[in-house]
Length: 175
Image 1 (cartoon, rainbow, N blue to C red):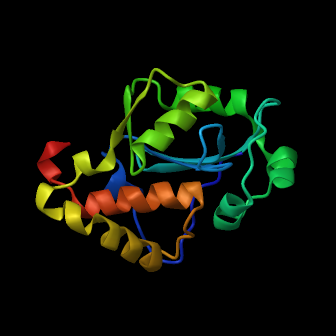
Image 2: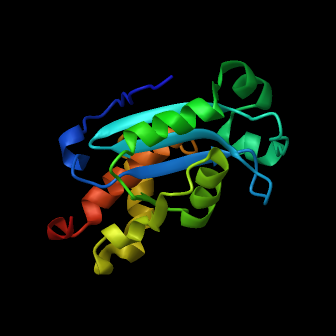
């Protein structure tokens, strides 16, 4: 179940087509036993989205996290795609890539490993941003959420906002 993003303002996939893959997860909680419940990925200017059905032994759940991302456990159990299938689709889309970028490297790395993808390194998105622009990354990302009418803590919207922010602040000749 992949959904392309449709926003009320214009952006072009070409603007972010040359960026390396950018990943965002929403999770069951922020604990050591948490697992991914949705994934957003931007690759070659395309945005992908999955709701992930928990594996049988994934039992961790936080109502605080649910209040933030808005997905309840019964919904993801009913409508989610099996974790193994999401893993296989991610592996196919990321074929040829050994590094993906995120604004929460440690968490995304843990959840990517839980999903079954431990061979891909997760790097800090700020590595793609001009050094003199790194201190405004969060502010610019917040502005992009508003400009493009994106929903915060929806994995595909978060990944797209990160990509658009990176595009706005990066050194063009480093990619």
